[in-house]
Length: 283
Ligand code: NDP
Image (cartoon, rainbow, N blue to C red; front, side):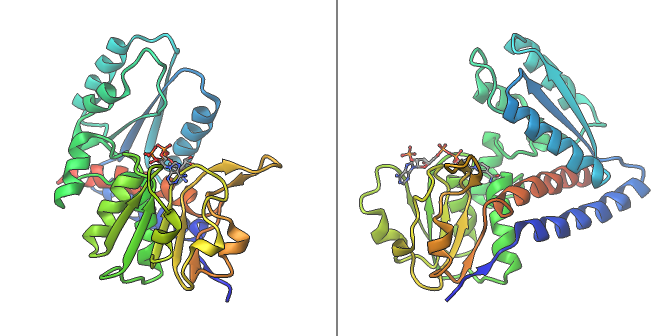
């Protein structure tokens, strides 16, 4: 059996079109949704990511501003800038690109963003809102994974989901979102004994580790849904995920590719969160 492909590019396109429509409606009411992106330093990957974020926003009618600061900017200066943006009613979303230079406390910086503008969903208030099922902003990567499951019409109720990875931005919020959809959730991590024994029981596996080929066909129950969050490089330097795609594709029922899976969905969900922030502010 060959798995059905979950096409993240196609779904992201559909979501961007929906965002564009809702943005146009908001603009007609006199509200221009706006995202402020802050990039400190010259990290090459961060420069690419922030450029994509600006382009995605502009293409859907959102107003995105990229503020670039030198790596030696002081933490106090950054906090002051965030506070100014918090107080600016014309700005609906604030995103500080991570990683930050080592002299800055990323946690302190993120906590300075107003929860109402926390479109990355990394603030403790956003994490808390997700935990208790209140409106907030969901982190874009797990939110994108949930949209993929929704799009294939997958009913999570009573299903067993195994999330591999427990970071604050992917694994933990992913597990919480699956739980809210009434899945039974197991979270695995580097200290998990016999990972395969867990994954073989799973109806849904989300791999968010950052290790190439860490999920192989012998670890997957036939027909399971496999979502690959990982971003790694293969021997040829090409982007690949955590899943041995060729092998798992023969066992799983559904599978996300890398590239073209979770990546574009993560980008699309930032637009959704920004629009949502503007809609909430508009009342
Ligand atoms: P982290 O490094 O923060 O977390 C990795 C997790 O994997 C940790 O919880 C770690 O366990 C666990 N882990 C490590 N080794 C094993 C193992 N052998 N077995 C089981 N679990 C293991 O990474 P992130 O969550 O930030 O990202 C994960 C991956 O997803 C990366 O490849 C990243 O590039 C990618 N990513 C992709 C995005 C996208 O848009 N497509 C967005 C964000 C991330 P422990 O906690 O015990 O250390």
